[in-house]
Length: 146
Image 1 (cartoon, rainbow, N blue to C red):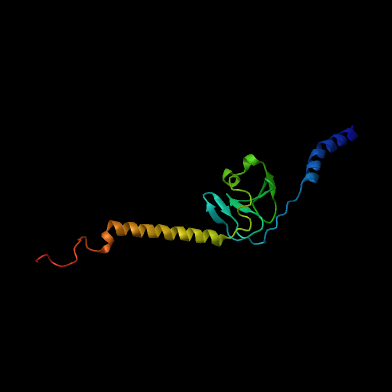
Image 2: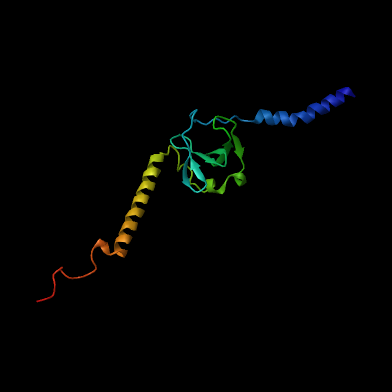
């Protein structure tokens, strides 16, 4: 009877053991210290200047490799495969590879240029609304006594 109980216990434990043996330790080529995430669109942050395309969202690091998503709370390890339905839709919508080796300076310069253009438009609008800062007459400044 004891032998049967041991056999049953071993059989029950086998699925867990098989799963543990099938577990693959995923490694991504990430630096020990990552640069700060940069917001590239609402709800999407990217880790700039790394070879892998790394996102940060709601306390998780996310990496996509060959249409498979992985996430971890710590970029140094503990990566787990995530079913597609559990990946934030905003991340899925980003074209694969768009932020690989991405430089944050490009986005910052682009944002600065947009801000400068908005400021220029605002200034032009104010000038139009306030008559360019000059008088409102059409004369040449001389009287009409002639």
